[in-house]
Image 1: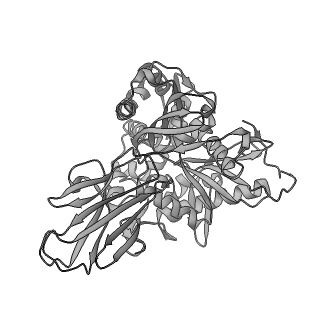
Image 2: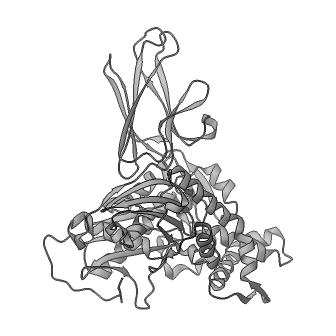
Image 3: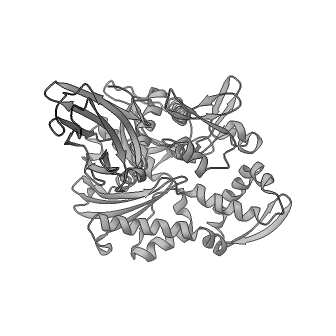
Length: 507
């Protein structure tokens, strides 16, 4: 794949041509691809830098995104937001418990039904921050290409749940971007390698980025991508490696916890630099606060080993879910910057006894695949590249029934799009309404699942228990977005619900 310096690209204007992008919106960095001269290229600058930091800096009457404010991570952490992708779609309690060292305060917006990040100058939701980044990426691309952008294929972690997908889509609406499709990152990687040209192949995609881990098993045959199973952890990635190493580095200093808390971002920056250096050298000498020490690759590997083992466990679990055996896997693709760590590459090769595909930079591969698919959506004959994508639901969806039980309506790994209906009835005589509690998860009990929405469907006929029937239909589109339809036939009552962060958007 070619890269071009940041010059204005002059092309003949074709009235039928629509300029589209492939966007890999990453936890740490974002990457953008586009078509030029019948190939997919990566947007970069005059220094051939293509990684765009997913950083937002807040000042009075000004918001800045990208590389030029990287130093504010240390100088002004309270007003500099990073890794926003990890916060999207999560509750206030979850974020506080999972990330206790965040330098800014958090609140809950009862109107927007979303967490608020409170900087000195502005209170803003994770979706709105993501929208700022996406808008910056769109403007940067438009300036680079000297063209307006028709739309984008935006990649997301395969294991993103319904709320996270909905919030990412909302972020794109805030940014004024037309989403052609939300594409799972592992599927994008398989497209980038051209595996759809093969007649029959089974692929394992190991995707470990800055904030998330996904594993996907795909079967490809004559241009049809069928996802057999997906799994992962949306809170496991390179950020966690940095955090573990930062805590180890801090242990070498006789500082109080208060000192660590105030210097957290600095230790994280040092940890990230050490991590990248150890991917190229067996050992390095590093200086922090005028203290010089030596750290080797073996020590780093031992610190992160339990997290790497977790990714391997999830891979094996996903293979089992897909009803195939390890020996049936033909190809293994590594995706994400964290897979540049030699220990991870070795662990994957040893576990699955396969050589990994790594001819495309794992930091670029998702954006390239997204770019190919984006062009295919507006130019179906691009590269004679006919594709059909059959994705699956990452996490089971259902509703609460008596006894605090989660009744599954659509199980995980069901092929999308899908529509499924179930009937429920009243349990009391002359019951006036029925509570519909929509859930997400794999556990039997409601208390162990994630609540998506809870609402009352009222004015139903007054009849003896068990004589009123309510139909609940779940419809999920190709982007993994859920709509719920509730209906009672005798009185022609019906309700359509769009779910977003535990709230009802419309009914």
